[in-house]
Image (cartoon, rainbow, N blue to C red; front, side, top):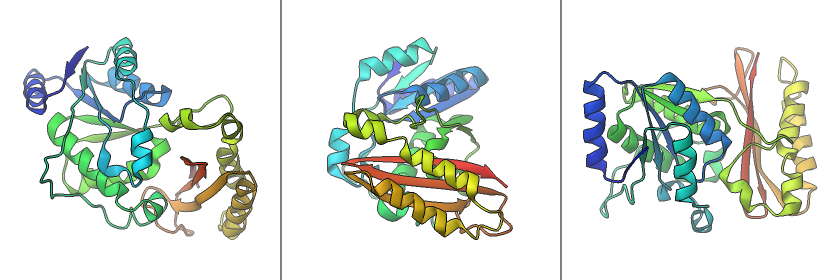
Length: 279
């Protein structure tokens, strides 16, 4: 596996690969790989001739400095895991922002709900860094995980609106045996909170099973889920919501798919999860 740190070097490498007719798959990450990341890499390796993985902790998508500082890092571990899956190139830049950076990408409406409501500026940072990475990597296909469903919706909209010739592939959520969605932040949970962490997915599953076709019991189910989760000491619900997928509008009788999503804080650790429901 090739490690590339310089933007210009990667651009030159990609240009050569494209001239050779190679199909390029791209997996953008912030490192500290888990099985969710690895599944995205496997999908790309299976689908494409060349797989490029970026490993960059993007500072502009963190709304809390303590969250950025606590984000886990283990570059050698990441390198070994990616290499074992036959990833071709790991892009590991030190910095992707100039000191006088002034340009931002913002997707309207999609970022006003769910995580966007409580994390101001988060999706501006996400969209901007992914836009920059797309311009550098110039892939044919990019792979994102369903766990970050709102992020995937934002990137899908950006791809369409900015006329990127890139296909977005969404991977299912990869879970621990007890149902907890894999996340790099899970390692920061206390032992007690780790035992209780699957509660979010459990409550989303109940909503999925009990929601009526006309959505008339939507609010009741949401309030019941919040009450149960917040009964756990040290736990606070950020939101539980139901939106149409992938436009994230308020659902109605014309909606064909629902996103049942939630976020909660266990101490200082913020966890998210969701279910996409076909109607």
